[in-house]
Length: 365
Ligand SMILES: O=P(O)(O)OC[C@H]1O[C@](O)(COP(=O)(O)O)[C@@H](O)[C@@H]1O
Image (cartoon, rainbow, N blue to C red):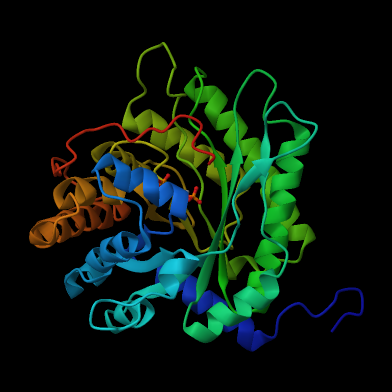
């Protein structure tokens, strides 16, 4: 072993991390992001007139995780929020066990939220490094095998700034390092928000720049790339772009171009966030991404929050008698996205949310 480099991970730990990452990106599978913090979950529940109480959040998550085992055909992992990771279903079975029994890997959001980045034009960074090692060790002992941390970058005339790209890439690298030491696969999520009137080309250029900062920082922190996943935005024009809408093929080409210029082939998978696209739109774009005639050395799949849950919430409305129907919506969306991850989605699977836009302005929280 060279003395120039510190021992980062043991070969056993590397093998374990690579194995988890591989399972999470198994062909035709993706991740259900059910890690909404209390405030974000409250916004989802408010839309269906359900009060944001601990019990209602628990009932909703029981609905999701209690879905038929068929769910595991297309869902490899679920990202939980700390509160959810400690809750159980109405029979007293901890949610972590409910997921394990279905062969679904439990994961956890470990960041503590987006905060202002002083000295910038309204840009932000993400907090949560304090005590992170201890929290990760506890999560691993609870049966959790991967983690997620989200940073947010904004496109405007003067942003994202060098400072924001540098700082967010660095904090994500520090998080990734701590996770890997604890045996959790870090999902690295530098989200370029869709807010703005910029065109597709601007979105691609900014995404490329952000990812270039990201992989430099991961290299600087000696991150074992085979034991990581990237959760980026798809490249789309800004929500307020006044020109002609981009086709799924144009978005897909720009997305794969940005990734191929910046994401090393050692990274096993890219799990896209849905970023306020409607359910069907996100699925169609993922399908197009898996059909572009460009080299794609990584698995390209999903880690959707809103685009997997909008129809579920619309069908549920907080009522026990609607649980079965709501679960069917989840199965439909999971299957559609599983097909899209293989580039085989034929389109046309509409859910209870219809084509409703899921865009939330300044989704930084
Ligand atoms: O602001 P929060 O509560 O951390 O949540 C942000 C949400 O964004 C995500 O990272 C991506 O979600 P979307 O697919 O809805 O864009 C989710 O994992 C997470 O629940």
